[in-house]
Image 1 (cartoon, rainbow, N blue to C red):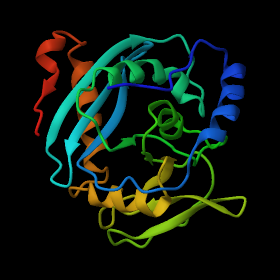
Image 2 (image 1 turned 90 degrees about the vertical axis):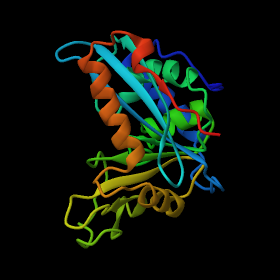
Image 3 (image 1 turned 135 degrees about the vertical axis):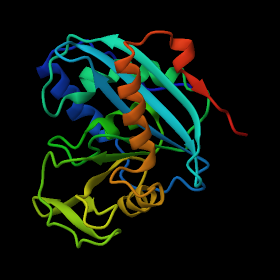
Image 4 (image 1 turned 90 degrees about the horizontal axis):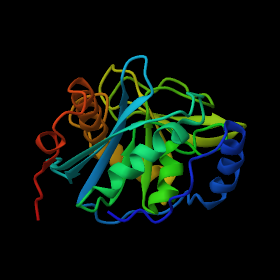
Length: 238
């Protein structure tokens, strides 16, 4: 898969913040991806106590959510863990993983924030600009803003608000289970993003693309990345 918007990740935290301020001007917060045939989930897992990252991309067919392709990569990072700067820690590995993707996802879901971020450029928005395609942030907790608890039924929502502006939506994906926090990544509107997250649900708290990415990231981390050929699975469905 071609990754058109790669930039250098070799920067200090202060330089990273300045780059975020520039890149957020390129984020498109509206649009609809149209007909979706493939949807991807992205996640990363770390070796305990080390700066070794296993980044994965899992592509599924849509709407049946069958796995089409799974890709992973392993990298070391020296960028520190700093809330709000996650992309600078995981981005290089994610770019490498996406370059190995052979299918072409129409929309990509990230385990993290989109514009619901202190500088409106969470990992879903940042990587959306790099990939130049529709992306959605599906986070397990809030990073900024506030949201009332949605009603307990599946599909209930409550806006995430910061300074009087709606920047995302708390979404109940399963009855009486904690919500996820959905925000626009890039090239998609909030209503469409919430609809896709709910349509990609299989009865778990996490939508299936990021759930499968989470499972696969843990799998490759547990094996220590041995035998890449045996772990990388392609089930291309045309």
